[in-house]
Image (cartoon, rainbow, N blue to C red):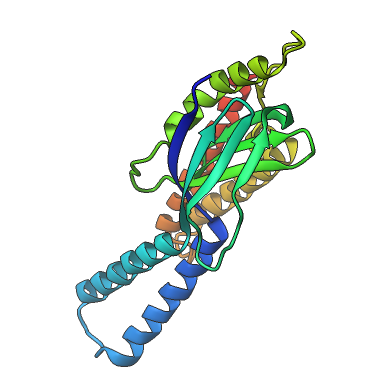
Length: 228
């Protein structure tokens, strides 16, 4: 079969989060120490938005790498085009015989494509989904189920067909569901406390952020039930 290439911008969650926290805190300290204080709230809000955007941009650059994923008859190859900062990982080559199943896992900030292997390890790539990114990540996710099975069945010359199926994401696990139910119960208690005690220090904006997160993960759990 013909080789297929996919050029993807991948992200390291840990590098992104650490860089975001360090840069955001550093810029905040610099503003407090070296910029004159202002009595206008709008200026303070604009300053916060500015350092937030700068921190996000720097964290995105630090936490991002560029790779080329190549499908061949023997397996797929992960080639580094631009590595992560302070990283020296080697290129990765995985035989189709090692592939067990695959999972596409959505999240509020990062989407993940995971290939579980028969040796109890996995190949995983994360992609930031907050901003539109021009690469082949979505195409890879769409093409993999069909192409992987075509490659592996062509590789096996003994007429024994092997099927690479879709696996279960974390949203289908019992542990995640129990955490979700626990968080939902706690959120309900906080909301009721706020309703019956308007003087509570809990802000409605904070409850809105938490509530939107619970709605998102609730939809992910519901989607897994439909798929099953």
